[in-house]
Length: 97
Image (cartoon, rainbow, N blue to C red; front, side):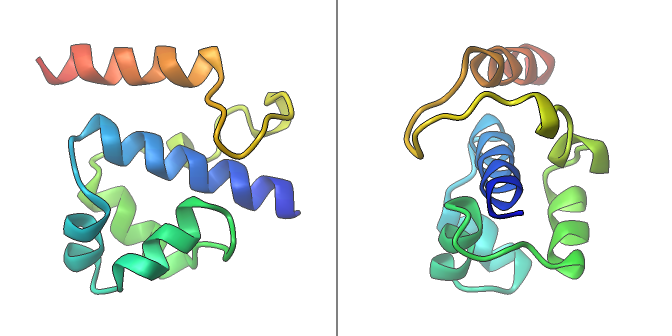
């Protein structure tokens, strides 16, 4: 379960950065501290359903975006980003423009 929490946190970070949002800015819009958002993104704490719903709205993404490919992610170090994650960022940036 801890690995899934980390993967969801990584996905949240990717979606946030694809929207050019800072942790501080997004946390403020969510009504939580930047530290708490950092802990979610790093997988130290799980994201709650109310916060997931806020993220869904603020990041303008589908709920599935947080969970896609969780079972297929290779194990990586905390600071590593997979090629799939990079490609997702590129797709999101292209859609934005």
